[in-house]
Amino acid sequence: MNQPKTAEEQRNGAVIRELYASAEGAVKDTPKFVSFFGEGGYFYDVAAGKKYYGKEIGLTVDIYATAFPNMHRELYNFYFIGDVVVVELSLNGTHKGNLAIPAGVIPPTNKEVHAPCCDVFHLKDGKVVSFHCYVAVPILLEQIGVFKNLSAAIRK
Image (cartoon, rainbow, N blue to C red; front, side):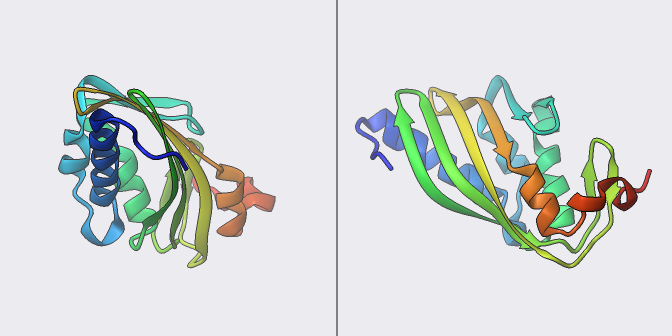
């Protein structure tokens, strides 16, 4: 992990930590999460192939909090390159609610997940311009026990 070298990198790191904190299952604050994005900023769920703008940015926070009410993001490493912050982390929780994915809904399996993830943020003036989220979906699906029979697990 490299350390922030400038005041701007330190501020960007603090913004990203606050953004993650607002998405934690126990204290989820979707409007606060959305407030970290600048005008025209977006969240890109790479696995789903979908970009979210405006208030829709919070949809993925709500989707994961519904499926994993105890969602916790374990932040491993931060990398700073000017206005770019890259974070290695894992998404941790117990699958106790419906998980909405592009193909349909996966009902609760009550299994724990510790899914690897890498997030790339571009910031300008302390606001997120873009957030690209790369979740290891096959690992997440394996951990909830549906990867081998995904089509049977999805309700339409």
